[in-house]
Length: 211
Image (cartoon, rainbow, N blue to C red; front, side, top):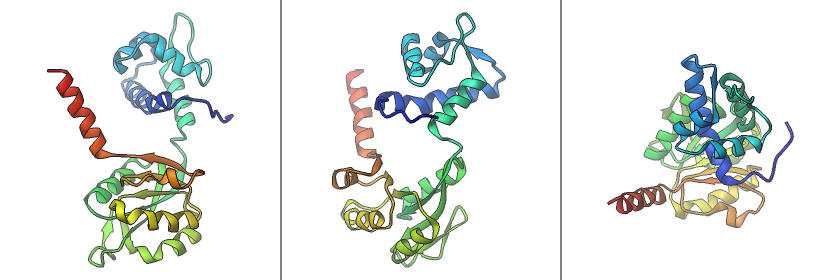
């Protein structure tokens, strides 16, 4: 599949939702769906659905709609869902534990092969069958296992030094739950920032506007 570098972030963020809906439809035995029907489920418009899919090719047929299985498989390929990139997680606290369990349960996109923490009480324990190691072992572990991505679940004050170590170890992809913007320091990295506080404020805004 040819690389596409000009796809807007808004389209990319909608792809996982399309995938989830199509996967559910596939499980229900629904063979075809129109752009209008899919738009209703997405709370979008038929034209938006067609525009999104046209970014990647022609998938539907006039008068028939989209083959649910085929479209799910196409989006699966676009997202790289079946790829298993070796990943590590740093920070075995409450958030880190929840994320580790989720990644292990999903078993797609990333293969969580290492969990690290500096707390001696957590080192040697297990999360989803993975032993928690000391953060002192990060560099050696990354070199040995060709780690692709790091999931960061540590306080902001600890991230800058940690990011330097991970970057020096060859990691260029980050799922970042801290408030430190790694992408501002390293221009050649791929970062997905997750700000839980921002998400709560967005929800608060919507509730306030809906009064």
